[in-house]
Length: 208
Ligand SMILES: [Zn+2]
Ligand SMILES: [Zn+2]
Image (tube, rainbow, N blue to C red):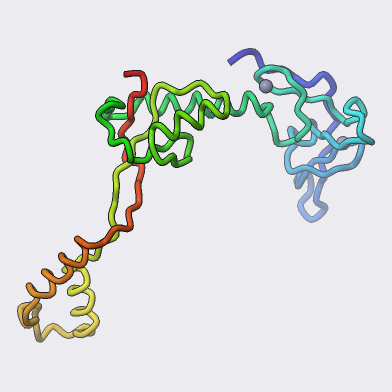
């Protein structure tokens, strides 16, 4: 990171002291406009505007990365730098992925995840990058399909527990034709089409 750009004009912050507990600072306020902030640093970054002229703000604050003006007290970076930093973080965690597969080995119709967003396919993701004028990153997150399904044994266990209600006179061997129920659930599961795609910690290498 480049050197932190300090504000050219920092607001004077004074503490607000609660009378009940002597000297206990409960908040800070900007002496220019009186706006109250939780911390001294926030008060010093006060960007309350007097009119629409930026130079009339209590402070002149700039992006800590590139120095571009930023007029939100809670915003340390401009939009551009924020996006760059997010992309960098995402690439760093993608670089550490335990498993990496090549794009050519990844199913064409399977979704990928990048920066917390889901894309229907690698192709769809690349198109999105082109539309937004973003450089296609080296890696994206792979997903794994998960079909809607019931678990026959979990259903039986739960229903049996409810039926016994704390008694232990019977055990599950008393359930008749449990295997028929399992077979019916298996057939039910096989006919389900609803699918969700979950990020699975595997990265897809888009450079190959
Ligand atoms: Zn102010
Ligand atoms: Zn910036």
